[in-house]
Image (cartoon, rainbow, N blue to C red; front, side, top):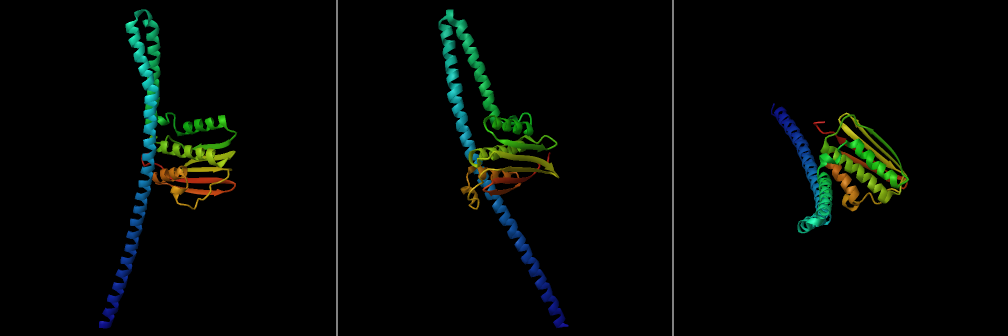
Amino acid sequence: MDSFKTRIYISIFISCLTVGIILLAIVRSIYKYQKRYRQLQHDYFNTEDQLLQKERKRIAGDFHDELGAMLTLTHRQVEAAILDPSASDDLLVKAKHNLLQAIKRMGEIIRDLDNSQLLPYGLHTAISHFIAQFLEVTDLQINYRYAVTRALPADFAAHIYYIIHELLHNMLQHAAANTVFLHLKEQKGHLYIYYRDNGQGIKNTNQPTHHKGRGLHNLSGRTQFLAGRMQLRTTSSGTSYFFEIPLPANY
């Protein structure tokens, strides 16, 4: 009887130990995943912060170089009109024109800062317009398909637009391709993006992400930020990307 109880206790002990090891392995995996996810978010936000700082400098430059000079000139025109009533009509017409230009330019700068205004006619139209600009200045053949049934939320659509923008920009700078396939498809709560070109490929893709270039780093960062996954395949005859990104819960 004692021997039987001993075997039972040993069996229970082994079972508890096995369950404990499994639970420990699961907790460790979750911890490693969360640590990696936090690092990816940290890298992404660092990249976004650097881009934001550059954008702030650009906008400050726009205000200083364009609006500052224009408003200073307008102030001088109004002053001159006050001092010389005989020339006031002509000067005030010029001042009015400058103010209208300043208002228009300020609106453009504000729109640049607002994601909701980035794609006023939707993602499909924005991508089509961007591709049309490419076709005006290159001999590219771009096969573009868009199979998303509903309008995407503004912030989510902005990230997707920047991904497409980065793909085409990288291709134009580095790939020397003449044919591009770009397909976007919605299926079972996910957005799928397939891109392929016939360029010269990407070298040294086995290096860590931060050694691969800012463009690839940004693509990876945006995808991780959207809780998606990105696959890259590159050879001497071209490069292909595959993105699987979950659609927002409120979509």
